[in-house]
Length: 487
Image (cartoon, rainbow, N blue to C red; front, side, top):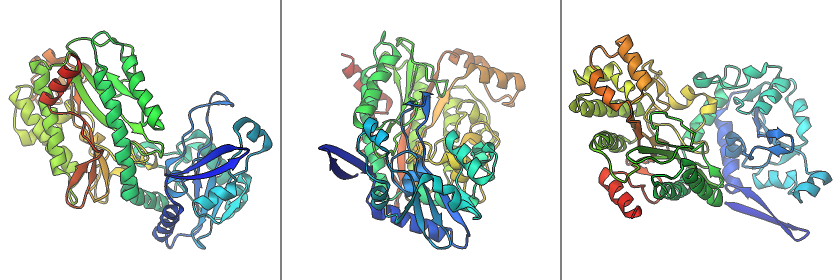
C-alpha cells in the first residue's frame, strides 16, 4: 500500500492508494482495448457518504469497488470519465472548502489525487453533466441510492433503470462495459492475490478468536464483539455482517442474543475486509461442548468430505457447476448410507434431491467484494458463454458456474441443513418422488446445519487455499483443539 504523505501545519496527512499509479493506468488502458469500437464515454461514479440518521452522522464510509479498481481514490464524491474515442480521462471532484478543513483538517487537492493514479485532467464535480451532454454514455449499474438518482438526472432515466435487477443485471447499463469490467476483475493479478492472502490471514485470526470464545453460557454477541474487534483493529472491518448462530439451518442468521448451549452446533460464517478493501470469507462449524455427538459427526464428516472433494477438483478447464454436481452426488451417497435418502444416485442428482439438504450453491467469486461484482448482475458474473442457470433448488442458487481459469478466486462452501419448513413442504408436494425418508428426518428437525468454507485461488496447475494457514477443519482436529482450548 502506497502512502503519499503531506505535512501541513505539522499534521501528517496520509492519502491511501491501494497500488502504485501504473497499476491503474494499465487497467484503464486495458479497458479501452476491450471497449475498442465503442463510441462515447465510459462513466464511473464513486460513492458519496450516506447519512445514517441525519446528514452529519453517516454510515461508515466505503468506496465503490469498481471505482477503486480503476481509479483507486478512496474519498467520497468523485467521478470520472474515459472518452472511448480519444482516450482522454478526467476526474471530477471538488477541493475541500475552509469549512471542510475546520471540521476535518487539511486534505490533498483533487489535482494531487488524480496525479497519484495517473489521470491528467480534472474538473469540478458539477461539470460532469456538461461533459456527458450529447454523448453516448456507458455506465455500470449503481448499487447506492445516491448514484441511482444521479444517473437518473444525468441520463434522463428512471432511478429503477439504473440499478441491477438482481441476477439479470441492469437493462439500461452498458453491456459492453459491464462485460469488459467483469472479465478484467474476475482474473486477479499478483497484487490482488497478495491482498486477498493478507485478508485471509486476518480472517484466520478472527475465526481463531471466535472458536476460543465458545463456552456454554456465553452470549453469542460477546463472541461477535471479540472477533469483530480484531477486524477493526487490524483491517477496515468485517467484509459482511457476521453470521454466528446455533441455528445453522438459517443461512443468514444475524441475531446474536442467545447463550451458548451445550450440545449444539455453532456455525460461524465471517470475513475480514482489509484496509485495502480486499475480502476474506470463511465458515466453520463447531460443537459447543467441544465434542460431536455421533449424529453430528456423521453429518459433519459428509460436509468435510464434500469440501475436500471440491478442492481436489478445482483446476483450470473444469466448470464449477460440475464441481457442485460432484459434491451433490457425494453428499447424497453418504446420506443414503445414513438411510435419509433412498434410490438411484444418478437419478437423485439429476432430479435435484440434494437441494433439500443444500439449497445454496457451492461457492461464489470473491475479491474487492465478498460476493465479487454481483452488483453488475449475478448471471453475467457467474455464468459463461453457453451456460444457463438451473431452475432446481440448490443448483439454481449457484453463483459461480463458469469454467475455471487461473486467477479466479472462489469459495468452496458445501453445507447440509435440516430446515423443517422446507422438509414439510417437500413432503406435502411429493417433490422427492418417494426418495426421501421423512420418518427418519423427523429426528433431525432440531439438528440445525453445518457449513464449511475456504477461499481458493485457481492456479496454473490446480488450486491453493488462500491465507498462510488453514483453519482447523477435520472432525478429529476440531475436537482436539477445542478440548485443549476449553481446559
